[in-house]
Image (tube, rainbow, N blue to C red; front, side):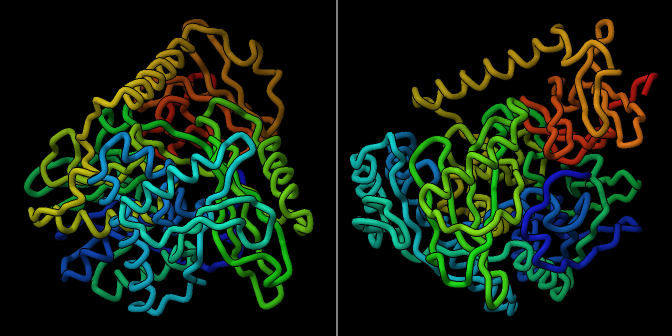
Length: 505
């Protein structure tokens, strides 16, 4: 698939894993080789279990290759919000879980001797233009109640005139691809198998549970763990409790050491987030992210990249040239924390991790801590915090769920509305448009040679109408975040089936 490319792929060399070539039986089959999948697989392999990882593409090819890899116990949605929503005990458990995740990453790096630019750094929360200092006061008090007693208020952050901030000590940053390559190597060292180019077609619970690939291979296992960002084992329950968003990142070149080695994020919604990444002895990259919008609700990435640069240069006028830009997809749960646990449809011995909430590196690592315990049938204090079956009675969360449900319903109505254009001849080369033909919506893409490719525009997950993403060159579903390449092939779940080709296509 064409589209943007994160800086990580230009600064790391990843091993290529071959496709699975024969059916097998193992203790644990993990679907997905991002941060969650490889963390779970590594934990299970360390326990002596026979582990197989199946990845549609190659390791980190999905959203884990598009993260900015902030390792934080500070919540994107704030502790005072979580405490009000789910109570003080859950707030304390969230602080404990995300803190433990950073510790586990650090220990794993040490144990496996992974060279991935890891460093413990401070994190700073600073105010947006429209927010007041009361927000910082509320968050400081809630963070202390949650057990993060080291959080403190400062007059400003290092490196710029931020005004008052909260300092979160002991956060972290790393190169995500180098870390994930190290995890994959550790899994194989411990006897596990990691397969790339192995797209999963179906998952069946039971004793044993079974995973079938599109090439016809079957992996039977005592436990199957689905870590595909948008879960492909649960088609409805978790997806109606979370919403897909695209987030944007621009990277700038700077002289080595000219920018503070720290994490920064602000308070607006959507918020901005900033960190450095060492490039070589002379240069750092400054990563600036934000400008989120709901997936497939806008098609203006160029404007969003420019807006991020304008915002960043307002604080740091001496930023160097823009050297990279990309976007990624974030799944936002209704109550701010990931879904990690038993597959909610009751499939026996099937587990999932989804709903990264912009904190995929720590949520994925939490999956590696929690799920191996749950697979053994043992209790864990974090279980209710991340339970995929959890519901809400909180008014604000119910309102958010209702708002998302209405938004999804409006997109179903698009099936009877006109398309983007009435004539496929109007579609430029390298672009896609949805056109209406009788009662059908068609996803029409004209390739660089001028050939038109036509597929059904109806997402194969739950039948929303997809929209064209010019920047990433993909068909994206505005309802639950499935994505397809220009030729209609699935590149991200929850959909597992390609867009059907039309007779004209």
